[in-house]
Image 1 (tube, helix red, strand yellow):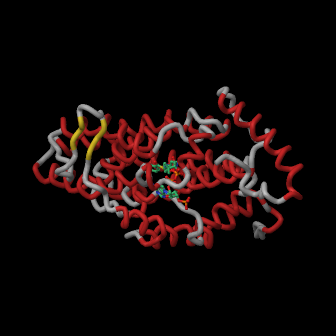
Image 2 (cartoon, protein in one colour):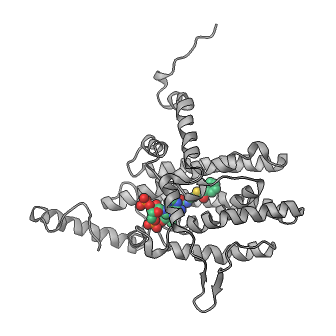
Image 3 (cartoon, helix red, strand yellow):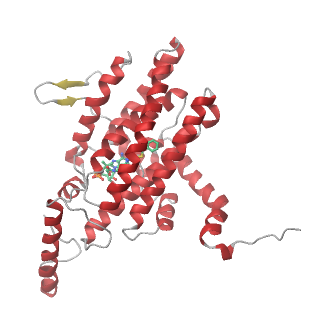
Length: 329
Ligand code: BYC
């Protein structure tokens, strides 16, 4: 089915509009099929606008909230060099949110509305950031494996059809490449460290494995949006294909460090070239993305706190007339 979801084609009053829209829809699809980018001033179907807004907004929210688990370790980093690298990384993630909110705004939703929807729990963000970073091992795993998963996803999405999203992702991917090096350096230091450090790292891999498998979204047969997004070349690989690509790239890297993966059924089928694995607990995935994960409440509480305490910064930048100044004596 491919059509404008807001028009009932069986209603005779809509005939003219449907015919006209069908022409526009065909021209739009042809443009995408020819590999042209869609820009903000171009005509686009309402559903394309809605889907892109949803996806970019969720992505921007993920970068903003994603800064929090690592942010909690800035004060506890094991040495000054690692502290500096972590500060820079966390700052980058917030910068990525900024780039992505800019891209989402080109579709018509204001940043204020997006931040508000995030704060009240109406908008989603990535499942992975609803888990705590318990030890420095978690920071190594986030830096290498979560960022690694994000790069797999973002490199694919950066070849998509919507110009502003693709351009933002190209810049983000370049910065993520540094994050990966930072994560890998942390990971190797722990993997070749004392038995306690190794165990700390292994425990972190065990904790993050399932959320990482969830990161690419539900299995293709359960994915709600993939079919439409792939027709519009917003997504260029399905959730299962991205997960498979991640496993191809990262399983060897984990194993070469002598670490194990907490799934006894994980193996690559040499005939199908696909990874087989235990089914990750999808009930947990849906619980987490609906707001009932270990840290959802804590994450949103931070957004509320920021809104309450830092509103004056936004006012000073956007509405200076609202800011009361105190005359200097
Ligand atoms: N988490 O139909 P489906 C980072 C939802 S930040 C939460 O397959 P789609 C980093 C989905 O929204 C980078 N929800 O969806 C930052 C939908 O629900 P709604 C984060 C998820 O869109 C700081 C429902 O499940 N990356 O790396 O076709 C420090 C059905 O799913 C998730 C992005 O945001 C999930 N994991 O495909 C370190 C990537 N998966 O909206 C690192 C951009 C699915 O109908 N997004 N859902 O209520 C995408 O590429 C796609 O949206 C997805 C899902 C592949 C994630």
